[in-house]
Image (cartoon, rainbow, N blue to C red):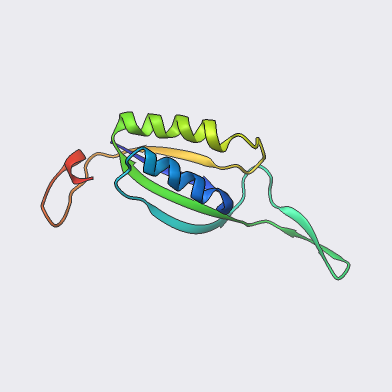
Length: 113
């Protein structure tokens, strides 16, 4: 099993949700976060004074799925969400998941997802 942490721009959330739903992902967690990557923020001006905005709004979507589906999801995200080729488009972090336990039934592994 794999855990995917997908960090994207907020305006790409609906596209990502559509991708995950078409791949029959059983659940996802969505978190509003702030951060920056290679772009290190951007310059703004307020009443003639320039200042740097370092932390940009991002969305983190987490989901756990089997390894085969994770590979498919990653490929579709790269194909669809990389179309604008813009800096700050996001990252996908992939983790191995040793086990999952559904508390209500006691199911383990893929059955618990």
